[in-house]
Amino acid sequence: MAETQTGQAIAEERRGLRSTAPFILSGLSGGHGVFHWFSQSFFVMLPEVVATFGLSGLQVGAIATTREVVSGIIALPGGVVTDMVRRQWGLVLAACMALFGLGWLVMGIAPLYPL
Image (cartoon, rainbow, N blue to C red):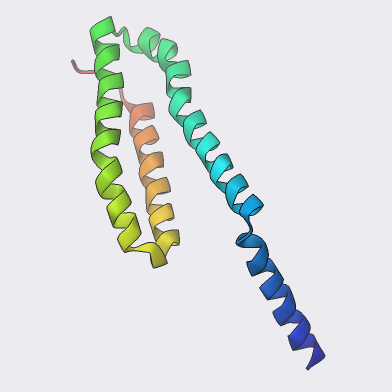
């Protein structure tokens, strides 16, 4: 009986930690930082992409514009869908990570830039 009460107390303590302001703030800040690190890493790699594919300034602009426009188009509906399926946040997170990886895979195996 004492073991189950101890286990329950530990579980409640862990849940309590997750709902504290410092935990939430550090999680949001860390996630935000990682997001921007990945977003801006593309521009760090862009000179190599330009050299490899022999891109012109117009083509580089088209790539950057496409990234931003697609992000803008997906952000609002993506937020609404995420709010609707809040209970399945793990599935949503896994799907987002899979799509993110698929995008990088496509970019990595692209043999040429047809524009």
